[in-house]
Length: 160
Image (cartoon, rainbow, N blue to C red):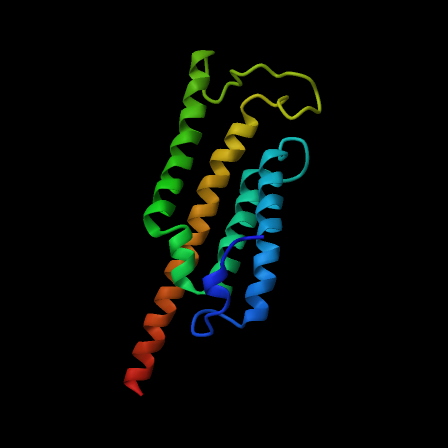
């Protein structure tokens, strides 16, 4: 359970205390499921994009339930930008490390045994890099659109 005691009782921020309590219980499950999809994406359907979307949905749910201030404390715009760029850079570095064997994205890690977690070479590393990028990008897009929406609604109210 996520420890958010101050924000649960504050009726001025976010939604009702019932929604906040449910989100506190569900958020850990969403994050664990997203991490599972990312880490086992080479063995099951899923991977970096699908897991990243699930992880971003966790942050978006946190934002909707507790308000923008708490979500920005958990992952601000600077942190989202750093994660986004780090994910892209890690993916590019993994691709260029393949040049050590002769061509771009060559699997330079030992394959291991079939149907084991460490059996796919560079694919889990690529999934993790893509998950960082997708999670931070979708959260940043959501925050930008919500801020822009509030700005536009204020402009419309002022015109009327």
